[in-house]
Length: 229
Image (tube, rainbow, N blue to C red):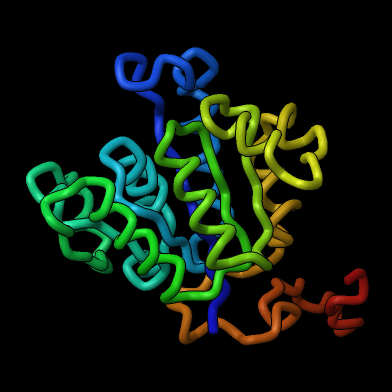
C-alpha cells in the first residue's frame, strides 16, 4: 500500500482569527504547500480536507508534474460546504464527499476528518500556517494515527507555532528556521531526491530502494547501483 501524507493548512483570516493571523506568513505558507506537493506527488499519496485557499495552490503545482495526479491525491470535502466548493475540486478527480450532519458546521467537519483519518494509514502529517481548524485536525489526527510523524512547520506562523510548542519532543530548529521547504520535506519525510515519480501508485515498487534512479553504466563499467545507500 502506498504511504500517505496528510496536509493540514490554511491562510489565517485577520477578521476571523486575528491571533493566528498576526504571526502568519502567507508567502511562506504558499511556498511550503507548493514544496510539499513537489516533493510528494508521484511518490506518496497526499490527503487533505478541501480548503478554498489551499486546494488551488496544490493544483498549480500538480498541473506541472507529469503524473496522473488524480491517482496520487485524495481530497475530502463535506457536503455542508457544497455552495462554496472551489472549482479546483473537479480537476483532482478523486474527491471523497462526506455528508452534512444536522446542518451543523462543527459536526460535519468532525465526520469528514474522522473519515480521512480512519480510511488510510498515514506515515506523516504536515501542518502549515492555519487557524483553529488546524488545531482541531491535529487533535483528531494524533488520536487516530498515534504512530505517524508530526511536522508543524512553525516558520509559516499561525497555528503551526502553537502545535510545535505542544509536541512532547519539541521540533528541531529546521521546522522553525529552515525556509528551504523542498530540502526540509525531502529530509523530514525521508524522500530522497533520487526517488522516481510514478504515473500511478499501482506502478510504484513496494520497496523504497527499488524506486531510486540509477545512472546508466559508462563504457561497460559498473552499473553504479545504490552503493551509496
